Length: 285
Image 1 (cartoon, one colour):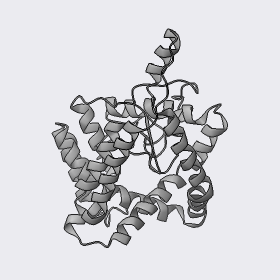
Image 2 (image 1 turned 180 degrees about the vertical axis):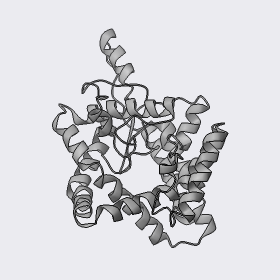
Image 3 (image 1 turned 45 degrees about the horizontal axis):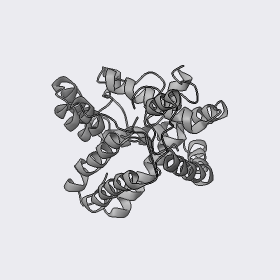
Image 4 (image 1 turned 180 degrees about the horizontal axis):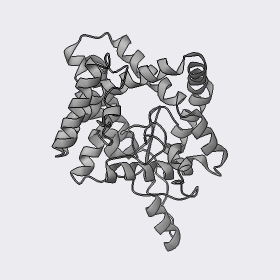
């Protein structure tokens, strides 16, 4: 539930981060033709910086986020976790609705609106998902990064964001726009602390649902950074092209789901042209 007071600095911070990325030291392109072709295919010219951010994310995850997420999963009953997860998703439906309109998908926009209305009323604010059993499935790729993709904007180079994880310039901008465009801060005067708390709780919720999958992915990776980059790109591209993510989870919340479903490439593979999340793979380094 971003607020005007809290979402604008976040969006500004994203813009500053992108500018800093452009000015930071890049990996030196190899001179060998074969190696240069692989370098261009991977499309990770900011790899030194990205790996440093990845290491920071991993340290933060292992020392803080993951333990809290496991404690949350082990102490809170499943029905309560599912209800809170549904409510968080319901809060994001207005942004999905706007993006589906901008993407020129009126049927998907109407379904999103119907889903939001049904879950907000009969579903007690979204705590109970009454729409999905009735066939009103949540629309995927309903973020502004996907909207830019529909408008023909390329993803650009791979980008690892602090806390948010794998992304690219297009989806990072999309995340900032989605944050500012969320209507809740304009409708209700919610304290900034509550907005930050909601962001943190959403991260814990997301991480609690992906611990086992990401642990397995990391154990089976020679280079976890490269594997996650590959899985992220494949999953995001499938989400963008199909409008529905492959089975195994949402790209931004469960990149390892693609690997579990057989979609992960080798550690050095780049996969399709790229992931968020955001848009946003918020809490998985």
